[in-house]
Length: 172
Image (tube, rainbow, N blue to C red; front, side, top):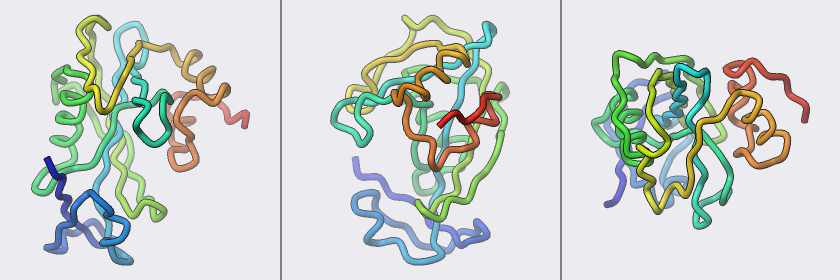
């Protein structure tokens, strides 16, 4: 299925244009943006649900939070719920989520909405999407910091909010 994204101006107003995901960098114009969601899921044990990217993706076999782009006509929360369902096979309760932060990233020409959800499930309940994810785990903040320090977590150059969210320092 081909992904179509709505485009927004620099103030996040819809501009009445869409683009296709494929080669979007060749289609998107200056001062046009799309919406991206990052979803951080935390359980009652204070662990975070992270997944490993498949070998065929950019940054192969790196750990990350779940994320993706909002489809045309989709709001940020709906995109977050859909991405988690697609990539991990779990259904989140939207009442247990909150928008943590929105970051306008000019390097990707997107508005990155960072969502936090409370959710408890067994790792055995996770159903990985073979084109996207190849592993998942509940990880403590210390484990995620270790993955970051060992260059096993997706690079945080454009995700610096992670240090604040997890309450960890930047050692690199």
